[in-house]
Image (cartoon, rainbow, N blue to C red; front, side, top):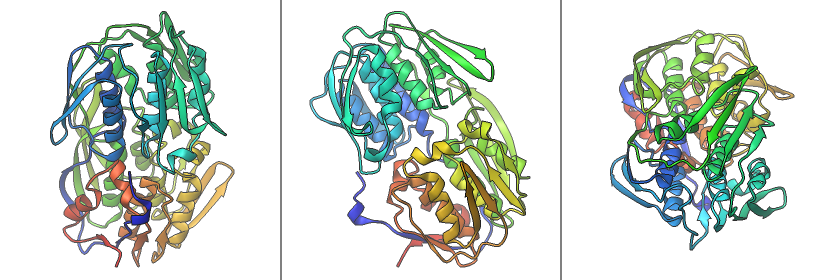
Length: 448
């Protein structure tokens, strides 16, 4: 767990030359979590290549070991999971510590709900502030019992259902985490679990369930979908190749768009249309981003991004796009700060319950750089132009605010500093070193 007493402040400044070269970003975090979990629920041994080895995913690996699966690291990004089968997880002898990972915590709540075992879960100070009722409330209908702190917050204890009931649940807000938690619980239930979503959210769980042999049907309902899972399947071990995380690729793409003369190629990026909203939004702003070498790997679309520096224009980003880019608004706001005109990002209520109040944190980050920004209800308005910089970004234990602040320093006239970049390791190990490599200089350095 990141030691708050050992903060790691960094500073960034405009590089002395354009960004250039070919690179790969860290493996997709969402797919990495799910590969470990479904591998633990499968019969046989699952091989995983390209696993993200950030702190968040390593917490999931540790949790799967405590729940009885055999999880071994063979080399860089290469892992092997020997599973217990659906319903075969065992009661953990210790507390499941999920660190900073809301994804892991919420999905594992679903996994635990369907097993007749007792478990206790906690996390770091940031995760203990985040609401869990959005998953514990629907999961209680399986017959599982949850005990939490006031407000549905961690630490929590769960007594899983002895004979889990299938769920029939309509998501009140668009959330792939809640949907996935319900599907994981439904694996252990006899009958069909149905989850209705009014807006389509990322479908990595559905894709991976099919990859491991489950029967999943997806139907269209208005603008949303209904997902049906036949319970108590026998999941069979299957190899998983994890593509590059589009959320991570977004930081490098925006950096290349904003540093004059830059031209980079980001290889092997996951291009799932329910995750690619950031690239659609950047294209709406005039970004020069081309897709090449497109293909399907493990049920997921993958390709290379060719990114060239571009003078961006302000745009109106619709609320309907939020589910496909919910983690990318801080870095989109950095792009908007350098664009000509005003960018309005609509419908960002969900950002208030991320690792921090990410809506307020994004606005504060831009103000620290001297950019003009407003919050109107759940909308964020960024008035683009010259970014003076010279301020310090307060990260509030949020890795995406930290990375966005460092990219902001690459375009700000006086650079920027972030008060703690240690949390970047939860999702993007080696981020600063990779930026410095494509920059050809030490654009990101420790704050003296």
